[in-house]
Image (cartoon, rainbow, N blue to C red; front, side, top):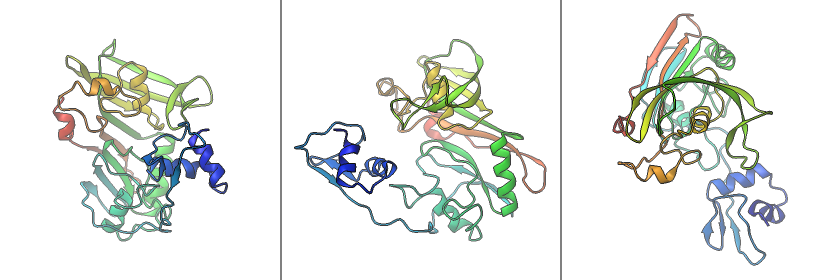
Length: 290
C-alpha cells in the first residue's frame, strides 16, 4: 500500500494535502527512517510513525532577519532574496521566512493583501535568489497584483546556469505547463489542461560542459524556467527536481542549490506611475561558474 494511503487509513480525518505536507516536512518515518515520498510502498508489517507538529500560529510573527533592500519608499519595497529563504510560512517552514523578516522591517505591513502573506505580490522558489517586489500600501498591492497577473508592464529577466548547450544561441519557448501526470509535486510541459507559458532565452556564455542563459519570461508559471530549460535538454545546474544530479557531482564546486537568479526587474511604480528598473548582482555561488 502507498504510504499516503496507509497514513489515511490511520488518520481518516487528514486531507491528502496535509499528509503530503507532513511527509515533505519530515514528520513521517517508516521503520525508523524518515520518509521522503508519499507514493513509496509499505507493507502491513512496517511501523509507520507520524509526528503531529504543534499548531501553526494564526498570524506570522515578526523576526529580526537581515534583508538585502534594493529600493524602498512608502508604497514599494524591492529586495534581493537570498537562496534558501522561503517566501512565506508553510508546513516545515513556520519561521525564518521572508514574511517574518518583512513584518520586522515594515511594522505597517500586517493586513496589506492578507494576514498570512502580507505584502507578497509574487514568489520565488526557496532555492532561487534575486529580485522580489513587496507592496507596502493597499493601493500598491492592488495595482501590483493586477500588473503581475496580466503580465503587462512587468518584465522579469533571470540568469540560469544550465548543463550542456542549447542547439541555438537564442529562442522562444511557448507551450502549456501543468502538473506532471504521475508525480503531482512536479510540473511538466503538457498537451492539454495546463496554462500558457512563454520564455524567451539567449545564451550569454558557453563553457565546456554548461551554459549561462538569460531567460526573460512573459508568464509566471510554477517552475517555468526550470521546466523549460529541462525541456531543451539543458536543465538548471543543481536543480534537485528537474536536473541531473550525476552531472552536478562532476562540477567543481558541486552546486548546493539550483543556479537560478532573478536578475533584472522592470515595472511601473504602482502609485507614481513611472517606470523603474532594478538589477540584483549575480551571487557568488553562481559567479564561480562564469
